[in-house]
Length: 137
Image 1 (spheres, rainbow, N blue to C red):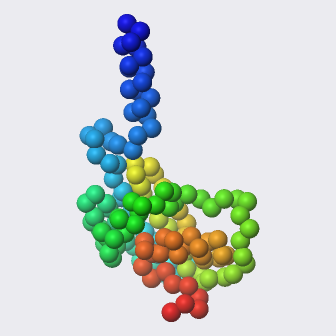
Image 2: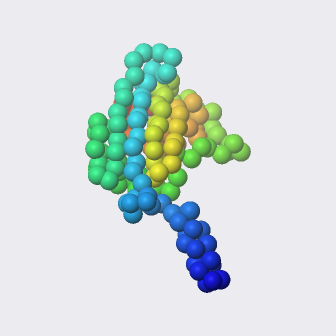
Image 3: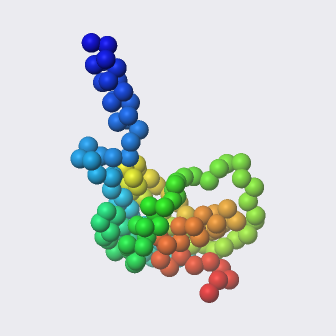
């Protein structure tokens, strides 16, 4: 009886932290990327979609984007509050990446208002068509 209870508890604990769905498949990535080249309060936006496993959507180079995302640990994690960031302005452009990534809901604002934000935008640049930086070609 104890073995059955222990086995049940062990299976429940293992199942809680996995990145697998009940069907045994990796949770899908289903993202909407909205880019405002002149900032969210100015001008028009461009919207793209990306789904992985299999790669689909309207984002250019979908398969490459899915491959890059697969190699990243926490691409949408918020920036740490204790970071010291250079005061470099990269431009007014902004983007929102929202949806599901590895089975978790995400919502990320990407901007170029300082060195930390610019570094993050460059890291996620493959998801941001039309997101360019002041002074870059």
